[in-house]
Image (cartoon, rainbow over all chains, first blue to last red):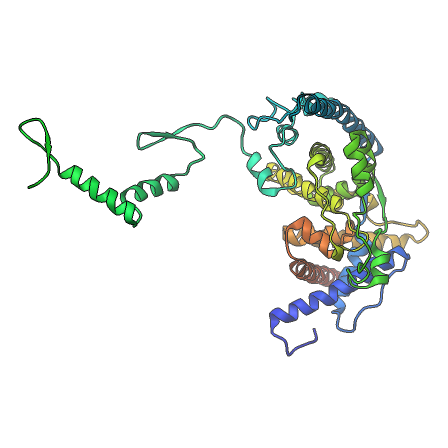
Length: 218
Length: 228
């Protein structure tokens, strides 16, 4: 391509901009039913040819009418369940002066104002979608890739983990436990920390006197 | 299954206005789907309008990604059900630089679709990769029926292009599908894929380069077979 004086990385960016501009005009030309669009002289002819082939070949495919109507019916069923639930939440909030919130916990077992199992109930085949229940409960944002990936883990209660005699949740990592142990043995520097360390060392050095009292070193 | 080539709603505006954002100026930018989204929020039954509007786009995206008709239908269904469930929490984020035809709802919907398709691909990892041209069926190239020879050439070309598409890394293929099939702008693709606009431009440029090389290789091997 052109612009040989540029470093390869910047040349790539410039070429990408030229390609992007051509694709904009090519897609606009499609609306006018034109086969091609004018391009910059800088555009690689191979790139242009590939774009033209993909423009002709990558068609938008529509699903079957039967599928479209079946899904429309399922969405309508779900909408009918969501509507009274939303109304119930609104009326409860207005009468009691508060807001009903879904308890953040196991998806599908609780839900805001009776939205429990909306996915399963709304489906004609009765199959429940745990992620859908989590979305309805407000636990999951479906457009968040990380959240969906986390929710994709196999279901089941989190098992407690015993580390060093302390029962902790699996949400606390081994690294976290190690950090706490290290921090306990390496107290932060500061007047209070120094005072506490001094007091602890004196307590350690204390001996039991024959009379039953405590005494430090002479 | 029917095949359609629907023009992008914002393509003409883009061509007239040139680079995005130039026309925004003093105009108050509204999300293209704002009225539909607000209606669906008030009454979930009104979600049907959004569903009909974007069904083909989401289904086509899923089909190009999964290369399986049934899996694409399943992914489409999950996408719309989750979108309806999460609609109360959808936040419109139209920016002036997105242009007057921007739809943050479409971007949001495609982010859901991308996650659903990713889950579907993970669960189907062990099943053999399907052929995209077989999945798309005979309607690959739009034939006019008057020139049989030209139709055959067009079909061959389409099959070659789809084979080249399948050889691309996931992110490059995904960017091309969103650009050519769903006719998204670079800004929209960047939002869907969670990348910068510059990164998406480079991604598409490189993807086209790979397709060009693949097409050249195919033609080279076909030519050698013809001479032999």
